[in-house]
Image (tube, rainbow, N blue to C red; front, top):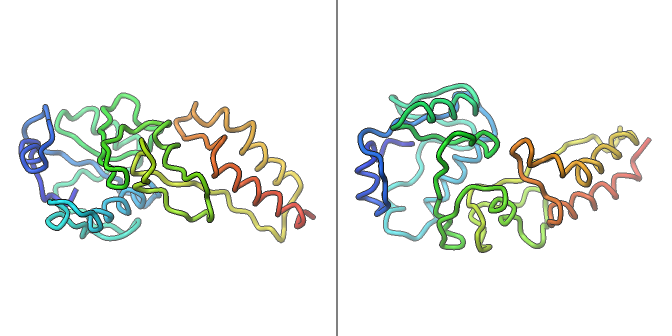
Amino acid sequence: FQKNVTTWSELSSIFGVVVQQTGPINVYVRSDARGTTATFAKWLETADENNNTNSADYEWTLGHEEALSFPSGINSVDGNPSVSSGVISDEHGIGYVSLAFMEGATPVDLFNPGNDEWVTPSILNAVRAIPPNLTTPGQSIMNSEIEGAYPISRLLFYMVNKYNLLTNTVTFLTWCLLQGQLFVPTVGYVPINGTSAQSYSLDVISNLIQYVS
């Protein structure tokens, strides 16, 4: 994504991975500032922290969060669907999308330095990244040390004004965290039922009841 490596053969020889494709690497990225880009960039920045033979030569230098400056020659498109369709239609293409937009594309296993494993992107492996005890909503779950955990994982949030809270809001949030979890995988997102993220969120909601007007 920084064009340190520009061909598939180069990628294979430098990093010692098996790559069937040859020729140039055509990179597809998001042109719009969104959480997908911010999360992907945040993970790429963790390469600076990894103790391996390649990390010192490939430190992330293109910016932080959503404020990124990709080099020329990168295919910058609008939204996850455009990235996905671009990669699917380009035999030399590679890009990043949210899990919900992977259909039709070839997923790539990523190395998780936290558990020293190559991990396939899937709902199950994303759930595995959630720690047994969640202590804060902003807790990072990237590069989890848990076996089988996918390295690029994040938590999503609902935000409410507790000083202007309606009963219907609490009811809706509770439904989302309980019955609503049944529908989450059908749209390609990761359910949190049975995890510390669910129990933490339910505790937060129980504490909000006192503010209901």
